[in-house]
Length: 361
Image (cartoon, rainbow, N blue to C red; front, side):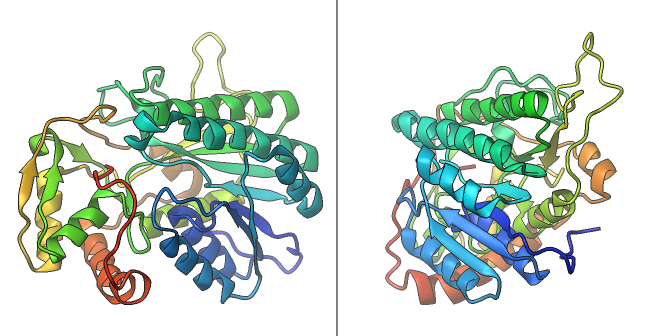
């Protein structure tokens, strides 16, 4: 069953990256269950801060929400937050996102995804947190071409620095689970999309370009497939897992180690729709939702990209009796409606987007 607030729950859930896409949706759902939330974010300018501020405005209109602007790379400030709040449950969604951005701004990933994550682990350790859920990524599968991707697969060949930092997060989490008994759950997200989504993601950029008569960039000449996963399904999975702290696997075998479990309280799950969609088919779906055709600018493969992603979610299904299931045509329709009714009218009425214009898949 998904998370429900108990009468005795007075300690807020700490949600990092609460002004970000996934963190915002998780915080909102928790608040809707009556669970108090403390959200933190550094509101950086990787993409339009107006969108982040608009998400925060929604959260701040709900009872039980408190926000603190904080950069997790600030060791002292992060330690003070954990010492003061002493959260039992931490949902860590803050990160420097984007594969292509990591090619030109590598230090941003070290600061946020490595140093920031270490500070979160230390905070959880010293405050005695009962469960840390954190965002990993399907990008960790890297050069692995065996589909579908299974949580027990080898992920030692990342193709971008972003992917390498997410793999490092999983290793760091396991160390803290082993040394300090901290239950950690890593969530490998597969191309999450939906209302309030990131402007650097493909569906957002395609919609924006089509509705304004601009061409769209189609990398690898469209010969790519992605496991597009709707945000409500992601949020449902997280809420079901939050009250299920990772536990040791008594059947774990050191001579044939399962990378997704451990003798420590450590788990890894794929969060994906398990129905890969071709890039050209996705464009057809976006065109249908927008009611217009796209002008397609075919380009070669970009450095750091992979040709296909496909999630095996058997472990998630077994753990919480749930798997993402929203069809991509339905999810895209909902996104286009949000884009037209809220984003263009309330957030960016002059259509002045900021950030990398190359679509992130």
